[in-house]
Length: 180
Image (cartoon, rainbow, N blue to C red; front, side, top):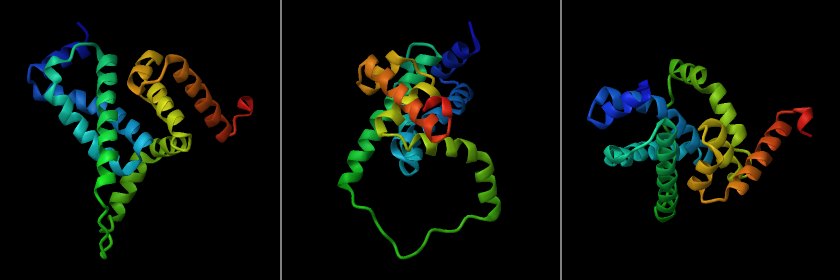
């Protein structure tokens, strides 16, 4: 039995440390996906809702690490759709007071930690939304074409085309002469 299967079984049996290990391994993938499809504003909240929903049904999950990743991203997408719908029903509250300024140490740490990832996600987010979503799922989440097709409700051929177009566009944006 591999480490992942043991960790998953322990987490499903109620082992908090095992669940924490799974969370620390997979939450960054969930967050990156949500940042691409929904922007930075909703990502943290939707990721939290994703894990709450997953925890409710965690004992019934069967599969390997790849299946768990696909399952979590499916939940994340559904929660994101719910959040977008709900935001249309709730007006945004505007206040007169500006948000608190972070300290210089906080800013420096955040920049050092997230600069390259945030930059890459921001470049992917410039793609048309359907291309950005499938490129994120294929490249960052490392899902295969059928898994992405199931998650997004698109055909496998459509996923392949969107992935190809998205990657070609990214190469053009980044100045790869072979892509033009």
